[in-house]
Image 1 (cartoon, protein in one colour):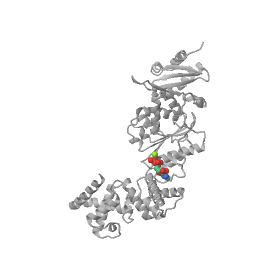
Image 2 (cartoon, protein in one colour):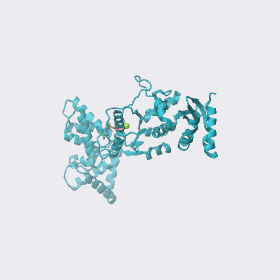
Image 3 (spheres, rainbow, N blue to C red):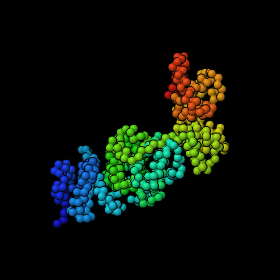
Image 4 (tube, protein in one colour):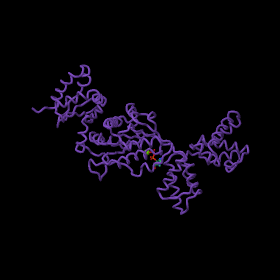
Length: 473
Ligand code: ADP
Ligand code: MG
């Protein structure tokens, strides 16, 4: 007699009932529906991801035992998990997860696993072809190390050397825009891909993942989408903050995350803010992020910025005088992408005008760009405004002179720079005749004190602030 899924499952239940208590049986086994039986694979449907995890955690042993006794040594179980119970218009969608203990066998079969379409639509790719999405220009060699990235970079290296094996799984890198998240996570992927060709590395932005998932729902190809992602050995997912508020996408990602993680696959993620500040992400997803290591990236300090500029010039085969490198490193302290942008436009200016790169050209170039990259109120503007207000020249503000009225105007300018620009104390000092950051701290403090003590002075500052605000709207 050929058995069908219902009768096999009924036999399984008889055995299970004797093994687990009545209460557990009702809670965890009665709701299960047998779906199909083929090739010694029994597929059962469970109501949720949690249900699936619970079964795997608590009843794996019983389930294995019964499946082997019913279907023979090669028997295995697959779960069909209801991800969305559907509404009137929508059909519910389900994904199938192979029982993790049988994964080796499943692994062998994976290239033949049914219905796997690569969701990365690349015309030249055959179905099932591996496509990592990695940009080979991002590697560890050209990722300059500094205090700003030491932990993230070394954790990245450790992961790249032993993907899925270190405790940094998942590895979560976070930091502001243009600080090198994409570069670092891609460097990890490139290193793994080079060292171990059999490791299927996939880089995908959360945005792309979301689009693919939405398309899969539309085209009724969720299973294929899931199958594709379950084949990945190293999943790199960039800018996860994009998942905010996208409940269904998060649910799907949660599935894939769990499955890969349980099977010792490596997951690397990036985000533009710390996990605790990620609004609109489900707690259960956030708690998964904490399983591994979270490391942040900061804005590189002056010395690291110098090293980044020099490295970039070296790789482009371009020479820039030291004073220009220093000037750029001091002046652009927002993020690395902007620093590179300024460098590129400086090179472009020099090439177009057929001139050498010198400090004068750098200043001019920066003036044109700084307008866009800073808030509208920049250091130059503040110096000019304060100079006019106190009838003192900008040169005097930057000079060494200790004349009382000049010192006050200089301190007021520094104070406003601190309030209205993103420049660091170091950079502000640099723009006032190369003073150091402690002079700037002192200036800010003195101006605050004077404002408390002297109401006339306070009015002057209020007036200047109004001017700054008018400029920035
Ligand atoms: P994010 O993804 O955080 O917005 P990116 O990784 O795109 O930032 O980095 C912006 C640019 O800055 C890239 O061209 C990258 O190569 C460069 N960059 C960032 N950090 C470093 C670093 N430490 N060393 C060298 N280049 C860097
Ligand atoms: Mg990025």
